[in-house]
Length: 167
Image (tube, helix red, strand yellow):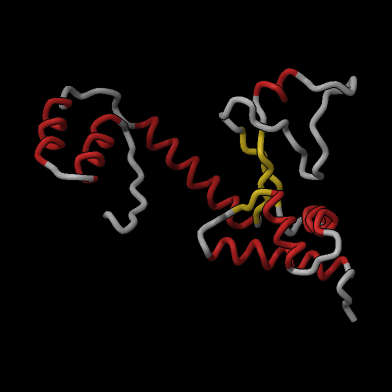
């Protein structure tokens, strides 16, 4: 018997939401979005459901650095504001605010593995080969997004084109 306030139900709904997000192309969800969606699904304590899911190893928490100035302070997976040992905000927190992402382990590890492989490819490409003029000529003869893609290829050792309607 698993009532609405059962911890197992909260974990199951959390995992289900993360699986649905993955099917839609999102390997992780921001913590506030996940807890809000859990509340919409009738989970009585969304924060506890996420914490239980993390504690059981059914999902992982990640911190993604925000580049925007004036962004919110770093938050831990438990939702507490990040502070240093003396109880004040640390300099690192002020310099590099982060957003907390929650994701299923299998997708997170696959994404990390892909990122590592792409980094190896980027580092193995020659830096300059003197063909910039040829690339620019090809870009000038192309139209629309094809020209942008050619310029990206010319300027970088690796271009990952994920497609879309314009491709």
